[in-house]
Length: 74
Image (cartoon, rainbow, N blue to C red; front, side, top):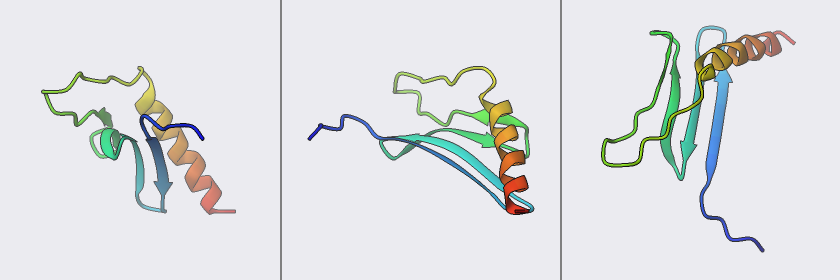
């Protein structure tokens, strides 16, 4: 068996009127899409080494929401 050092998780979900896209590391939220203000948010405390997601992560989240809503129609 392999020892697990860290667990990362990506969550993408949607409804007809709302959506969610977020990334976590070891149970802590490290990035989420703020679809109201149209930007990515990195809610990390100042006392840790800051992790930054690549440019275009928010735009990818928007595209994933469009795919998710299209899938709802099927």
